[in-house]
Image (cartoon, rainbow, N blue to C red):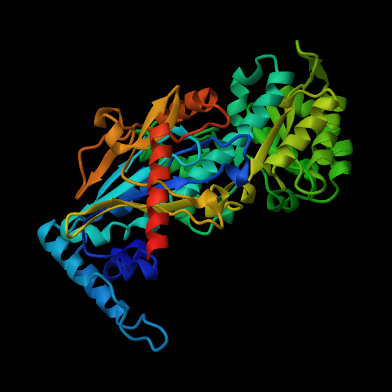
Length: 504
């Protein structure tokens, strides 16, 4: 049985959130929003990030139709969830049954979100949730699911930051600079096998494809092509050996000769360190050179151990010695018919290090590609961009409306925004305003779900990718995103709350 079918949507939240419906004061309206609070790993010089992934959450979870069975299963589960004796745990059973009956089984909240592919800076609200009437206490029940957008956003941002590093090296050492068509293939997704599950491979792999077209994560390439891009191809790869292939042959030379015979007219790659990497470069590469040259294709050498920069440089030197180089208009060497891909131990600092050393030895960046697995899809977490959801507005049962916020004196970076919010462009920068000060038509937080699925046309993957490319380059590396109106409102609400606290 598929895990999504096995686990009822009624338990797809954190334990403590299931009990919040009885913890909130009586209210007729509650509003919460989500934001990222810092640049990648706390980077203050370049705080840009790519908003992406809300469509997946909306289509696969928020739009799911609840049934009585979801509540029946929740009854059984929650009846033994309370510590320490597995007693009954509170959850909003009656509210669930009510909207199953009265709202055709759909979660009765409104979700607004920024367009996918938008490039933003910290503290810009990326989504806003509104719940009203009897369902107000359900406002933050979906928080756990919506917060999981942190993952595609973080992977997309990491991939783009890697592209910037490679593009800078292209600008220096490749004739077409960062406009070279080769740039799109310089970072390849090697992360599928290291993912915790298929869903992670899809979400992370698709996020990478917003920036590059190279991937071995077939789940993501397939999903992007057929679920998001009307069947138009998105990701590409080439035939390549692994150590099992190389060691299955009596010699590495025979394994490579087979690859040349099968794929030598096009692109292919062979791993070169099954036994002795340097010896393979010194003896096997020259031994097959005539066959390779005759085939007319392009051979990618792949080291898979040792110091990354040393391994790449060794491959480039071997390629130059055996196949020769040309010198481009920028004075850098371009190896002929052979390149190298580094796929072991790759991170953005390693990419920068390799390219720096390669350029210092006179080699063009176009000779080098990178494969990134764990460094791309696994070595990130919610704290990388510090994502959080916070309540911002409540209308109490007596009709009194209050804008609320968090402002911990122990960490002011976690200060939240008060009141319903809107986002609009100011000099090209997505900027947050109080909702009351923005014309609704100008608000970039668009309704993507309103108490049930709505008629909403998501842009295809190619369009989202184009948006990312355009906005990333035009967005300032670091931008102030709070409008004067929002800063003044923060100050007023903070002073009011401090005064109330002192008086109590």
